[in-house]
Amino acid sequence: MSSRGWSYGWLASVIVLAVLWVVPFLGAFALGSGVATFAVAATAAWIAYASVRHGVPGVLFGVGLALVYLANLNSEGPGTVCHLGQCRTESNPWLLGSAGFGLIAIGSVLLVRRYHQHH
Image 1: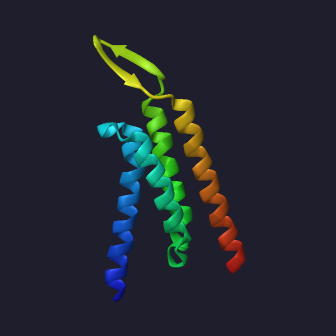
Image 2 (image 1 turned 90 degrees about the vertical axis):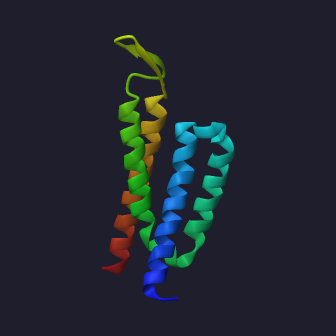
């Protein structure tokens, strides 16, 4: 396979995994737990594939940043929050934030370990 074909295949797999992780958090289509289970299994299989491991720290860091941002958006939750007559339901920011910071920490540690292995 050409390097360009490999790049597009890798990018497509990252996009599919990102969608699988985002859908349960948004609660879209009431598929939350089933999609989350599949997302965990797909991510484990993706990481197990040897040539993909180089980008894992960046992916973990990026997903962690997205979760921290989502926690910030839900900072008044959990529960129903009303402003100027408009109400919305917000998720628990502590769960999202702790998961995000955990992924950022894991990604950072993996990146530092890889750096020290090569130098």
